[in-house]
Length: 69
Image 1 (tube, rainbow, N blue to C red):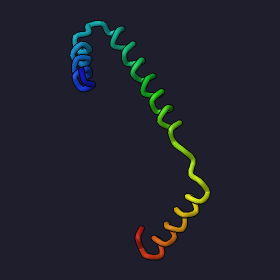
Image 2 (cartoon, rainbow, N blue to C red):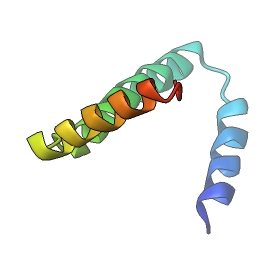
Image 3 (spheres, one colour):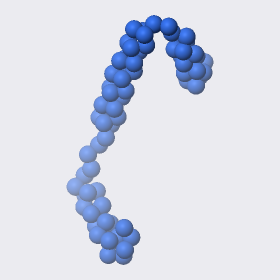
Image 4 (cartoon, rainbow, N blue to C red):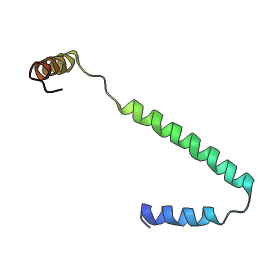
């Protein structure tokens, strides 16, 4: 089963839940997982080298001189 089908099935199951407590727990779980995901994505970022940083500055200055802002 592909991801899209799994999500549709999950939503259908979710919509059938009658317990407010269960919905609250799922909301908390989802919020916690989304926060973890943001943290993981932030860890994937790599710092820019000084050389790349200086190239960006030079390019930005050149763009500014040529009214490309």
